[in-house]
Amino acid sequence: MVTNSAEYMRLSNEASVNSGRQPLYTQAQIDLYENATDRVKYPNHDWLGDLFVTAYTKNHYLSLTGGKENTTYNLGIGYTDQPGTMIGFEYKKYTINLGLSSKVNKRVTVGTNIQMNYGNKLNPRQGADDAFLSTLAQSPLYPPGLRTGAGSRKHTLTSRGIKISPQSWARMYARAAKISMYRAISPSMLN
Image (spheres, rainbow, N blue to C red):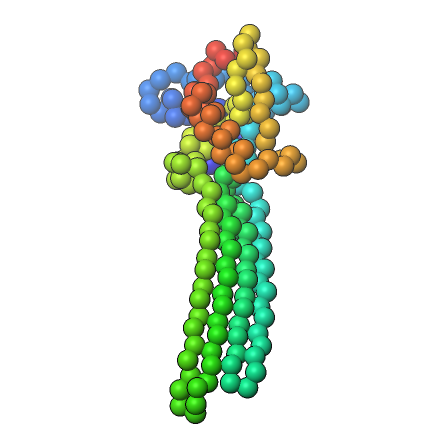
């Protein structure tokens, strides 16, 4: 995966020459990206850095047990919060366990155990493969954003330092994919 604009441009040139075509980018254009101080004008975007995040799973479980001589009970409630390491994925689960047993005589014990679970899974409609492969296909020459006219770009928020819910990311990803994420950068757009 290439996340460096200048390296991406060099590799694109090499692929173009190996295919019998002219290089796509001039050395002057590559130098502009390699030595840029203005990353809005000359982006060097890490798409995988936007897609993957550090995620910590939280599990909480409370259990109560008790009873008397011949009858015992067990009650437990649990909560799991598992955010995805890929933006747009998360899983929350709630559990309740109830157990009751009674000793009728030396040889016979009667009991019941009831478990209830509820889980809520959030993920993009296309799944992880589509999101990952689409991200791999993106050029570091442009950040996520939509053209607003006259060559300017309206930037969307990234995950770095800004808290965005996975639902918002999933909606933003779906909208951007429909509008402009799959367009290719041509050399004429770099001037």
